[in-house]
Length: 225
Image (cartoon, rainbow, N blue to C red):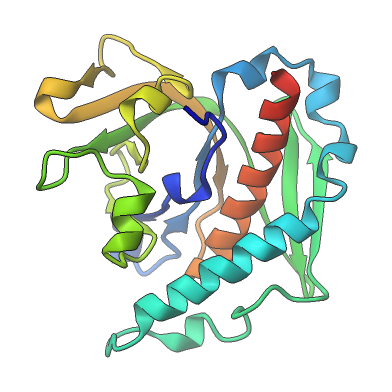
């Protein structure tokens, strides 16, 4: 099993309560592999880790936006103004890392004077997946085949939805009394930690931060091995 995180395994979360209040409601949640916590803090916060990550993030983001725009084709209610100016990775976009209190780099994206960021969340999160109508757990392959937009709507107090197999989820969290993998019931839950973004108004900004965090955490996973 490939334990590296596939960015499509971490779909963007649309927190419904925020949307109902007419506020920014999209957030990126990227789980942290358990072995990464064994890396010394001074290594995890070394900016050299993301020194050459820009080209990786650029490639992923451009691929993700092509897919996202394709998903929006024919959607009469889609607000295309939300993606205008974000169709491709900008030459003037800056990606930086700043050591923070959580023992990781806080990942910062600078774009024309605006700053968006995604950082390690100290509070644990519950990672969740379930069966689809064919009694198979959701995966990125299933989502792509059906051309689903990379967006999951959930409540503010509901678990973070992942498109990850139960076996792989065990590498990113632990089972507890309240969070367990129950294959016979079609439910997989583990308690883990994640990088979380602020609430954002559109998909491009959430996708960029998601991709940045995945690239950084996969670099750390390589080091942990």
